[in-house]
Image (cartoon, rainbow, N blue to C red):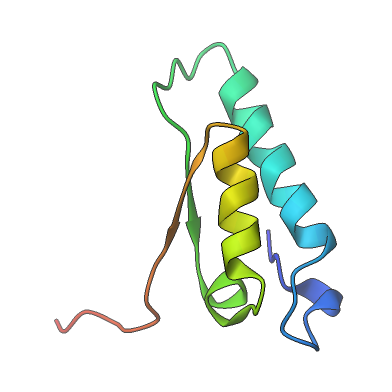
Length: 76
C-alpha cells in the first residue's frame, strides 16, 4: 500500500495514517498470525512527511510500533 498516494503533495500524511493503522489492526486480528508485536515499517512517504511524529504517535496509541527506515541501499 502506498501511503503517500495522491494526498502527499504538501508533505503531509492525512488519510494515509488512518489506512496504515487499519492495516495494522487487520494483521493483529488475524488468528493465524499470533504476533506478539506489530511493527509498521515506514518508508519515503513517512520519512518525508512533516507530520511524521503524529503518525508514529497514532501507531503507538494503538500499541503498534513504527520504524522509519532510511532510503539508502545496502552495498552488495
